[in-house]
Each structure stands twice: as C-alpha cells, then as structure tokens.
Length: 247
Length: 247
DNA sequence: CCTTGTGGGATTGTTCAACGATCCCTTAGC
DNA sequence: GCTAAGGGATCGTTGAACAATCCCACAAGG
Image (tube, rainbow over all chains, first blue to last red; front, side, top):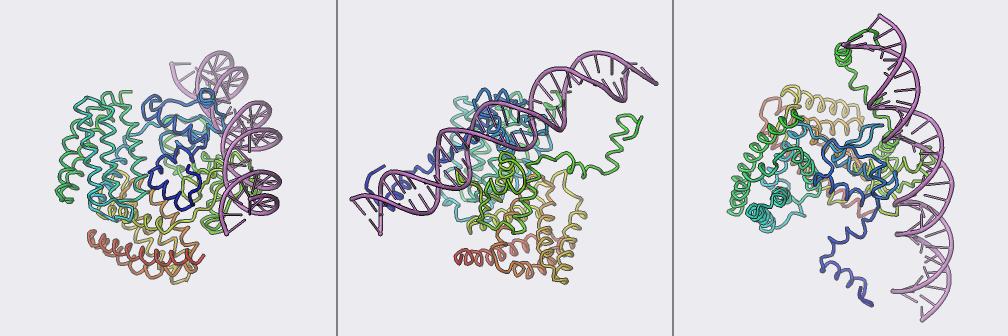
C-alpha cells in the first residue's frame, strides 16, 4: 500500500482497483469457512456423491483440523442443504428427493419469471442493458462450450444464464436463494448417468430467450422461460425418479 | 408400546394417532438447538435489541452450556439472519439496514404475488378452499385482536396472514424463505417506537384481499396485495430510515 | 422362520481447559 | 491533531475426555 496517502484517497483507490472481490479471500478467513469451501467444492464436483457419509474422524484427520472446527463447517453446509445431519449418525451428502426437485423448479419459476417481469426491481439492479448483456454473455459462453464439447463448462454456463436472469432483480436475498437452489440442482445431476444430455437441448432455447430480451420483449421472454422450465422440470423429474428407483 | 402387533400395524397406528407433530419435541433435542430456541425467543421479543452484543462467556455462563455448544447455537441464528457474526469480534443482534428492508419487501412482492397468481402450485399445496380459509382465519384473528386492543396478537395475526398467502404455493422452500424474511421484519419493528401503528391501518386491506379471494377473483386480489405491499414498504421504509438516523 | 433381547464396538454429542490470534482502547510520541 | 506502540479482553482453534447413541451380530425364545 502507498505510504502517505490520506484516508479518503486510500479508500477510493481500493474501490477503483476493483479489489472488492478479492477481499473475500482475505477477511473471511475463518478455518471452518475455509474447510466448508473445500468440502463444498468436493461435493459440487461429485467427489463426494449424494448419500456418502462424511466421517468426522477421517475428514478431520485428512484436513488437519479438529473435530470442533469440522463440525462448524458441516453445520454451514447443512444449512446450504448440501449436507444432511442425522442425529447421532453423522453427516451425509444430501440425497435430493423427487419432491425436492419439483420444489426447486417451483421456486425457480417464481423467481425467474418475476425477474423478467421486472417485479420489485431494486436499487442494486444493474442497468437494463448491463443486465441483459450478462445474460447474453452466459449464453455465448454456453455455445462456445458446446462447440468445444466441454460439458462441464456448458453446465456452469447454463447455471450462470439463470443466475444472470435473477440478477436482474438486484436483490441480495433473491440472489442467495437462487444460488442455493442451483447448488441443490447440482446434486441431482451427480446422480444421473449423462448430465450433459439435459443441458444441450436447452442451449438453443437460452439463445432464443436472450434474443427476445435483447429485442426488448420481456413479456414474450417470460413466457418462453416458463415453458422452458416446465419442459425441463418434466424431463428431469421423470428421469430422476427412474434413476432413484434403480439405485 | 403394544406387545405383539406386527410392524405394519404399528406404523399405521403411529400415523393415525397423529403423533408426527410431537416427534419434533423428542428427536430434535440437540442442546445447541434448544439454546437457539431460547435466544431466538429473547431476540424476537426484544429482550436483546438490535445491535446488542452477545458475549460467548456471559451467555454461555448464564445458560450453563459450553462455549462450543453456544457457538453452534449462534451459527444457527446467524443463518436465520437474526444474528450477525463479525470475525474475532463476536455475534451481535442484527441491525437491519434500510436497504435490507427494501430488499425484504422486494422478496415479499415476488413471492406473495406469485402465490396469488397460483404460479408453480405443487403437490403440497392445500386445497383451494382450505388455503383461502386459512387466510380468512388469519384476518379474523387480526380483527378480534384489534377489537381487544391486543397489539401483540394483531402483529402475529398479520404475519400469519401473509404466511397463509405464501402457503398457497405449497412449497417448503418458499415457506422457509417467507418465515425468515418475516423474522427479519420483526427486528425492524423492535427499533420503532410504535409498531402497532403500522399494522392497524392495513387490517381493513387484509379483509378486502381475503374477501376478494373468497369471491374467486385472484387477479384482483393480487393487484390489491401488491398495492398494499408498496404502500407498506414506503411508509415503513421512510419511518425506519428516520428512526435509524435519530439513533 | 421370524421376532425379541443383549451384548460389543464404533461414532457422535457435549464439555472443558488451554493457548495463540485478533481487535479495541488507551497511552505515548511526533 | 494524527500516527504508532502497548495492554487487556475476547474470539478462534485445538486436543482430550466421557457420556449417549446407534449399528451390527449373535443368541434366546415363540
């Protein structure tokens, strides 16, 4: 940091540099949270599959943290619905039920359609052009990933597309709700054999929605999105129910 | 338990007896959760006002639980947004900002209007008549509380009214979202001098909305509700901002 | 064969004491 | 008046300990 600058100048400097995103890596340094970050990554990438039991002793030993600290991390992830805590039995990677899956889509329909309707748009909402730009960028990233057959990138691009839609609302609580719901959805995909299959057909529909938004017809985009979600829910729910029944 | 009944019979017996609600009192007995229940009551009743610091040592000593257990309870309440955790500084009863208040109403508008629009109604949704009946009952309870000048009852009746509206969706996640948001709203009222003032004028509008629903015109009810929320937001937000500025 | 007890072994639930790390406030210095 | 160093309080994390609970296997009884 520069030596003799005044307080206000220094603060402005930090803002301009766009370091706000990096602060998360510094200030938020609690060990339990860092452990939770690690475990969250492992879960969402499928290393710990749904239903797997996370033993306090083995995980704690492997990560070199005490049981108390590990339990705090478990508690964090339990509240994110990624882990499930059964009393006196330990924590398990959550197994999403078919009812949960339906509920997830119900929430998505409510939130995403509200976002396109521009309901309750708040002061944090991005400029209209800026927000739609982010949506378009997510679609484009998906198209590039599909062309390169980078399926993992395609799935993250798809999630980002829907997150960008919700971001139109400019509501921290809504953003967090959506983040949690999409994280749950990842658990579902880890149970399926062939997750990519579910993303690819919807890429063209993402494009259509983004173009409709760019054209300024939000009402039409909302209708397309709701149809999209209903189709997606039906297909995913059916396949998931069958997959659950099998094993 | 009965001696020689077969497994299936016993299960049916338990279901019929309606003991499912009591199980919560038995199974969910973790010390941390019980501590959290106690603290949650104290916070929502205003014993711990917003901004108050909850020392690990003093609270833990008073309740006779160890610091580790207490910290788990703190984390539970932090996730409910009732407490705020600042690293190395302890936990504080959350002070809702004016921006938070606006965001809370933004979420409410999205969720409550979606509920009346019947969007994404799921399998847990109550029968149409049953759900509206609960809404009507909440309004009625509010009217009786107002007549008896039981202001505390009036406020809970009002919250129950909105919760009943959201319950129309039949979505566990949406219900939980609403519960959290309304709990946050309670924190706001504890900062105000005269909370009742904000509920009373809206009682007649609750009645109007319930009657419109009973008449079967959900679209009109949605418009009324959105206007209600917008008015409520404006009034509450203004008064709260001033109250915060004062002290 | 099915159900009902009864152990043992493993894991979690909870508490405690201790030490290092961090923050806030005060004091000293320029 | 502002910056820098020090002290005290509190939090963060650990390791160990013991009780409570669950799971599994095995034996006893109908």
